[in-house]
Amino acid sequence: MDDERQQDTRSRRRVLAAAALAPVLAGVPAGARALSRGPQARALVEPVMTKLADWADVGKALGRPGDMKRFMYHTGLPRRDLTVFSRGIRINPALALGSHVAFVRYADHSTLLMGDAVVTECELQHFSDVLHKHGIMQTAIHKHLLAHEPDVWWVHLHAHSHDPVTVARGLRAAFDCTGTPPPEPTTTSSPPVDLDTAAIDAAMGVKGTTDGEIYKSTYVRRETVADGPVILPPGLGTTTSVSFQPLGGGTAALSGDLVMIAQEVQPALMALRHGGVELVEVHHHNLTDEPRLFFVHYWAVGNAVTLAKAIRQAVDTTNVIPMPAEAT
View 1 (cartoon, rainbow, N blue to C red):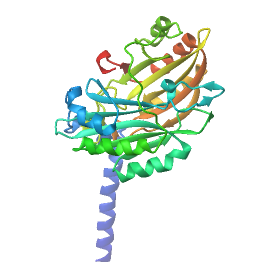
View 2 (tube, one colour):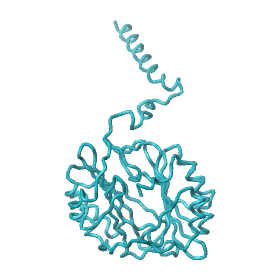
View 3 (tube, one colour):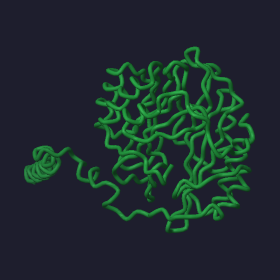
View 4 (tube, rainbow, N blue to C red):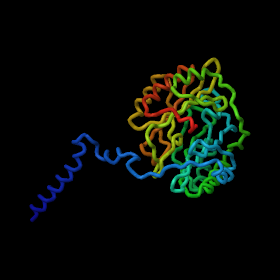
């Protein structure tokens, strides 16, 4: 009887081992079948179009005016109160100090909040505590700049709720415990940027936009990106961005990030370094995105057009397209 039991145990082990090895022997890593299905293989909730008036209560609760970027109700909270220097260069708030939050309505009547908050090191812990008190998640805490003073941190925000007004109140409470200044009156036009923007556009392959003195080029992932049960509209948490701050004489300070899937990370990093661009950090912005996305933040100073060509080489290692005009 003991021999029979041992033979039966060995037989079961062989079956289990064969089952475990089958995907490997077939050239497919174990678990790849589930991982490769992508968000299209499961039922996901679609975003729905809304109007600015639909967000009046959210704007009132947040205490700041917002605007529409296609599916997104967007509010900017630039840290104009901070004087930040990196490598001896004063950072324009629109280059790398722009807190922002975005709300999206979904077909199931839920609302997704995603955002990115700029806080000083002295503000970080209290800001975090207030977010936690109001049920707003932090999905990343990291740096976007190399050596800089004062110390500043970037906190990515996330909430999925059927009560966006309550979420907005929580955001306001958190931002109110920082030095984030009140909004300025909106202007209808920006002054010309002191750069050869036509040459930058040609190098980047995308028509840029102005934000005050800053010129920006933006791309989005080609594939559908999901965050948990919902589809992210283009421009929400999945963008590659390049921002140019003029320094005079055609030179600029560049700050930005590339959005990548795992197999694109090393080619993108190598392309950036080959172009003389400095690496800042590689990290996630979200917790439950699919496909899993990574971001590399970078920094460069030099001739703006030359650097644009270098950044384009890195952008071309990733599966992105220019940001649709209606999403900006």
